Structures are given as structure tokens and as C-alpha cells.
Amino acid sequence: MALTNISLAEEALSLSPEDRADLAKLLIQSLEGNRATDDQVKTELSKRLNDLLSGKDPGLSFEEVFGRSS
Image: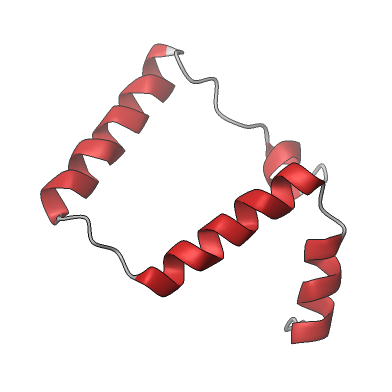
């Protein structure tokens, strides 16, 4: 089922204040365009992957990402 602007807004408003702030920041950044070079993006992605693989960043569970269990 496709999300309409209204249903998308309702979903967003049901988020915690912290999650709404994160979403707002992400949306604003998407309007500004990505000024990062390919090398900067690759460096950041490599760092994030290394943090996940080393356990420095535990990542998120399925439930945390999707808000429900499978």
C-alpha cells in the first residue's frame, strides 16, 4: 500500500520527539544536496562498517528498525 502525504505525516508524528528531530534533520539535509565527495562517502561507510564488525557500534535490532517483529 502506497503511503499518502497524510498517512506519512501521521506515521511521522507518532514517532518520539527524538526520532522526529532525526527525521526532520534528514529531510532538511536531503534538500541541501550532498556535498560529500565519493571518497568522503566511501571513508564514512568503511568506518561505519568497521564499527559494526568490531562491535564498537552494536547496530539496531529488526524491531528497532521496523518497529515490529517478523
